[in-house]
Length: 262
Image (cartoon, rainbow, N blue to C red; front, side, top):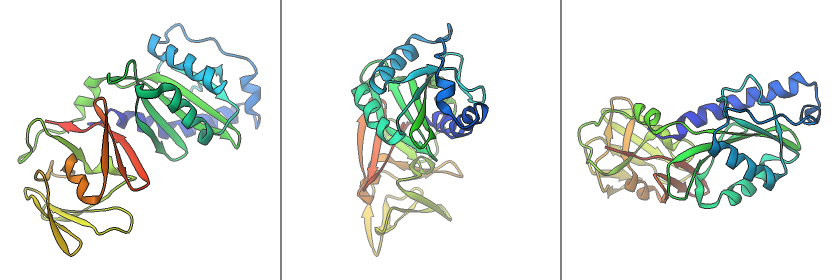
């Protein structure tokens, strides 16, 4: 479905990988970074370009990527003497409109998809996680291919309208909580606001003690809620296009995702 799904998985693995870095060198991360590692000959041009840009901005040093990380031979790893919180806006600002959406967080790790040009498809991603209280590891690697993302796309269920964008309920984790109620009903909640209860195949939905009309009917693949992107406005959410991805913001929380278009 969305291109960031594999990236989010790798982001989760990043923490175990960086713990391997500190474990392999005792308690001193700078000891590992003292000797710069050469960039692999397999490094892709897009990865190399982004790594150079980021390194100059955050004053990072290239190091050998931990073997425990599930990254490709093209990956470039950077050691930086700064916290992820201070690095995220620097990296996001440097990449500008090539960054697709905003940082996606999984535990202490963060990931960001990057396109070669504004509005293009993502061909690179950046992973970031803390090594210590004042040190971070950044990983730049090639993004999952569109083919891989398409392979994860569910088959078109009954009721969906071709050409219209939908999102999976599981894609909204962190901004909207989706609870299956059985009999084709799902409850969508965020913060302390009124819940939105929807029924597969019906535009009319219950919002708190009242009701609203959705722009398109919700659907399901038998397990997941497949919800019209525009329907998120009923929960007070907004979405900002970023190439083929969108950033969905609900209050203070936001998530970047790739809508399904059947």
